[in-house]
Image (cartoon, rainbow, N blue to C red; front, side):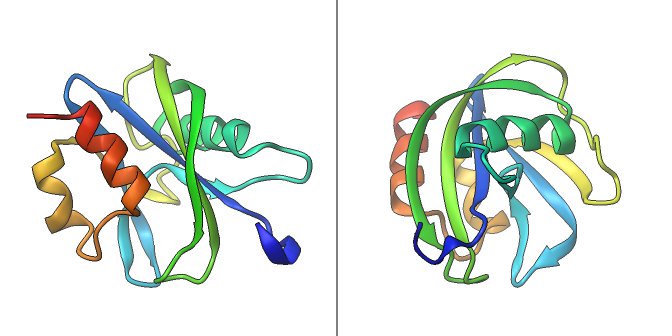
Amino acid sequence: MPGGEAVIAGAVIVRAGRVLLIRRSAPAASLLWTFPSGKAEPGETAGHAAAREALEEAGVVVEPVSLLGERVHPATGWPVAYVACRLLSGTAHTASPREVAEVRWVRLGEIPELVPGGLFAPVQAYLEAQLAE
């Protein structure tokens, strides 16, 4: 991403027809519900950062599979990379209560009420393909 800012890496994790979202303890701009996500550390790929954040915030071990897309988030102005991840192990829980108030596996149809601004188009398309109800 341009500008040299640290990229926020978001882990898009699907299991049994649902996607994992976390409710932040403190919202980032207008965002309360997000994918497990956080800043990539220097030298860390978006995939590795997404996997680390999934473990730190939701207590799940995941493997990054593919980069779904990147954008400057319209609500925060932060550069974000969305990474599709495969769940390997763990039971999702609030692994970092300071940052995360709640974790929830949600169906595609529940996302609009939790993420009122909607999802980034490539992420929405990926989830529609993965979560066809």
